[in-house]
Image (cartoon, rainbow, N blue to C red; front, side):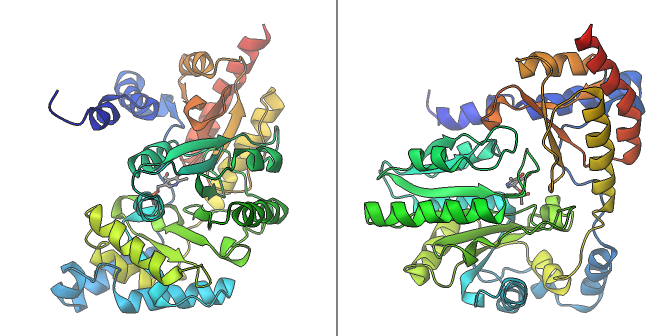
Length: 398
Ligand code: PLP
């Protein structure tokens, strides 16, 4: 067949989330949207802060078309990058400059670019990810020419199992992706976890005489509910690239805006930054959306109202655990990672579906026997779903 079969495979393989999404729409037509409890998608339900919309209007009324709709330089508008660098320094004191910031079309682009920048051509390079992990990591790593290696978590807490992690590193390890707060577990890696993980990286880098890059995937950084600290990885490990996104932190997933921050103390950091620029170029990104670069710079301190997520989290966690479900109490993101009530998560998903509850079976996230509940829904959906969750649990007790 005269075209790329790997890409065909990616495009034609039905992702379970897409399948659920389509089912949900069709089912809502049959029985009414209020009777379908769809917890499948990580699409923010909380609106963008009002200053975002006000800023868009103000920009449209006052700024030139070139500034708002023209190309920016490939790495992004210099003023925007300065605002972001200043903000990072204020919060994390890492001495970063605008020349370490590269504007992107969200975390997905940031990850693809970072992986392309560090994975060498025709190499045996491996990238370690921590289960449970965002399923697209596999796609991004393989597309950049790397091999995905999965480290299994500690049972119950879903923190990193440091011993397991250490055993996954070898002379081919090029990078490690850390996602905290985590999709799909909602777990925030503790400072102890981060310190231990970075110690392993330093030890192994020395042992193999090479740099191992730490890629911090941080779209959920601002979504924490308990005041827990989300360690900023550059403060623990020099060879860190941060992939940030405003998709969740400002509820702007469709606008495709985020950035890469290269740690200023990274070995050959300036060259890695140039490799990032090259990777962005080779992947055809050209530049991040100009209007939203300007919006971000003006709304750098804006915050979404995360109280609504917290309320949903508490309602679901408190009630589900009372009904007999097991799950770790998530400190962040907007996901609950629940142990299926039978060993086969897919069968459990089917049974939940018969109660009109739509959750995502998580085998593809690297942990079997669990489902993900995305609680970025209305409170009404959560409240109305509770009796169905209860009935589902009771059915398993029979
Ligand atoms: N990383 C994780 C862990 C995610 O959950 C997502 C989106 O859900 C992304 C990256 C991609 O986010 P973005 O919309 O910024 O590309």
